[in-house]
Length: 370
Image (tube, rainbow, N blue to C red; front, top):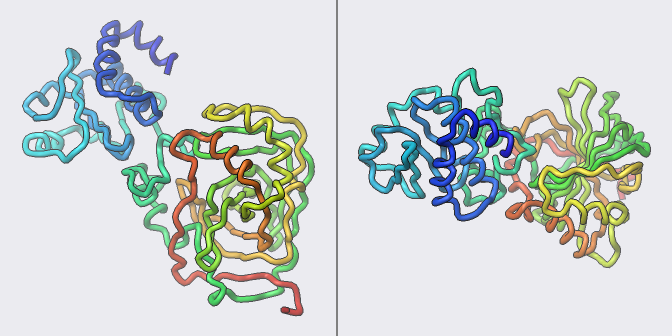
């Protein structure tokens, strides 16, 4: 935001009044509030003659309007720069009518289209936790992800969404899927705090092979509690090993389930100090040297398999899911470390279970079945 401020301060010396006025309405510096400030600053710089509406799906209950003709609307505050704020509640009367005549370019998805002079396009980023929430009661929560951006439409309309519950009575037990063919190797790694989760990214950590297709290991991240459930049981944590084909069109994810126990998880123990260094530092990253992905121990013989989606926006339905049947242990301290590291409000970062919609689920188990 500082670079944007420096540029605007030169072009628009009156911008100081905007910031002063906005500060009357922002009770905290949480990312959703600051994002509103950034949008308004960009608007004031590039489109001083155009009406604007910032959807509440962007920033919880906060909506913002800029137009010199809004003075007749009750519950609005006007600044010397014709900036209006409306805090919560529905729109009524002339305010609704006024909203209907705003130009299309000021309403694009949940964000702001302010013409070709804006090079950023303000496109939502799944790595930016200010764009979506796991709070089911929030306007940008899981039930509304499709409304945040057109590219995210699958989140609430797709028929092959993840995570799911694995009801054992509906699972087809097979042995022909074979042992997981993973060819991991130690590689340089970087730890990244994405705000909504902690991710470890490998430079060249090897690959996974499924049905002859090779998927390169990209990263691992963690959800607390688990996203997938088995017979309705939710576990304390779930790790996702994310793989992609070379063309980036298909994804394979191995899910690892954890229960709280006395024994710590070895992999998390190795990166514990680095996790602490990134605690509550959104977008911070740290090179942590050579890390062996094989330290995430998998059974590899018994596992669930189904087709599904990413569990975060854009919820793309091009994912082969493998949920390892071996439930590992993790300590309360390790789970607390992950939760303390992420941004406030994302300590519980599990998407609700999605409908199965008659998708086949297989459970691979070596023959003979015992």
